[in-house]
Image (cartoon, rainbow over all chains, first blue to last red; front, side):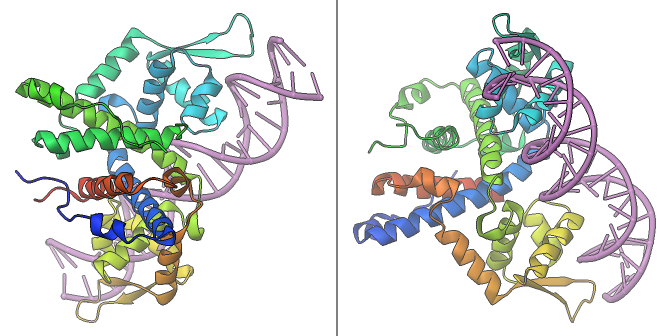
Length: 164
Length: 164
DNA sequence: TATTGTTATACTCTATAACTATA
DNA sequence: TATAGTTATAGAGTATAACAATA
């Protein structure tokens, strides 16, 4: 088993970096990440793990994480417009994975709550071993998995915004 | 400036890992990556850097990387079906970023070649400093950027498949 | 017959605009 | 008037099926 990480050391390059070089490198890195994410998304799109599309799975995880968010708050987290979230939540509700409850103190507001069935689906998704990515990751040594943990954390922070 | 990478060390967890735990961790990691990529893709979708959609930019980069690939080979790399690639390439051709040339030895085959204008667009995209991701990455210290370079390489390998 | 790519058509996801209900 | 969410409609991206050209 070989390491999934490239062997080359970039320290020498960094030592001679000027500010302009740093800016250029950052822009190039951003471009690489963007292209890789675009292609990976297409691969992931082709499978509906646990019967959910990627968007539905992401929204359901968001409902769990945020804890009965309003539809609007969920739309913000998922970077979609409210009408799009109405549709996604409608599909999840039809499958019995969430409930939509009108807020008693402000009846314009709808709160989305995950159901036990929804929790079960999330557990199922998180345990899938034969999905595209799980297959790619299978059998990595601990060092590579640690790097991947970092990568996942990084991607999550990049999406959520960097308030630190 | 703080490090973009998480501080916690996962080594302790790994040391006590049994095979079953490793499998479960891999599945969970795959799930995290999938959800993060889904949401990040939606953020990236909202901007058309350099006048290209993410799909067009990815295909154009693929043409440059593969070096005048056939339409079919490009479709495989981009994980889309041939009819989809016909459309993407058609758009790129209309913009003058690629040319479609019938192969002389097998006239069923179309070779896609990047034009000087296409190369210029790729350079432009790679130098954008105010795109969503570039903005997120701006100001990282060299150590973090080095880590990010590795993570980008890892992400690219995950998409391309792991033939090592 | 098999293969490469295109055309025709339909589906999914998301967006904007207009609307309803509530504040 | 302003806000939260929904409905109506349209656009982008991709897929499958059927087809044309070539091998």
